Length: 247
Image (cartoon, rainbow, N blue to C red; front, side, top):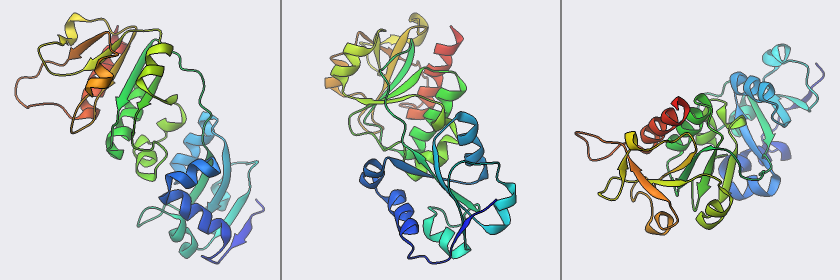
């Protein structure tokens, strides 16, 4: 495989990748985000993601499949400059941000200003596992294309449709009932609702589903618990996603 060689950490492409790792604005302006590692590359190619450029240590070049995008051979120092982890896996690559399609699907999960990257990554991986039709990001959610979220998805980011919108748009476009996941007297236990056609809204880790969002919902649902005050957002999402898939 013929690859161009980059040896300088000051190379413009190296600086661009570093900026994409750290800045949401840079990702949005470039229409691209960064992924790392052979496994993520395999997942991206298997899922039909648009891979734009690949940066690889020389010893890993023979392991790459036939590719149509530019490939660069880089030194360990250059790879470290582009990586978001202390021990890079030998490959860094850029993918195009997916275009947002019209919102659709009978089994959806919405997230109201979720802030933790690990939670979002786990939720996207779980949504992929249970075959959800997509995840809706409401308000100021953590960027799904930030490095920590991308790693946590383990490749599921390439397969789960994502939509960013406000609650008014979700209400207009979703063709299923909206249920706020809340623990109070106004909500119904999970066992009393069918989620085969539904959009369940998980709230912010600290404040839950906002009153503004809840006002647009058709009802509220809870997961009955016996001990702890509440469940982690990703754990709660997993239970709702399982129930959607089970019905």
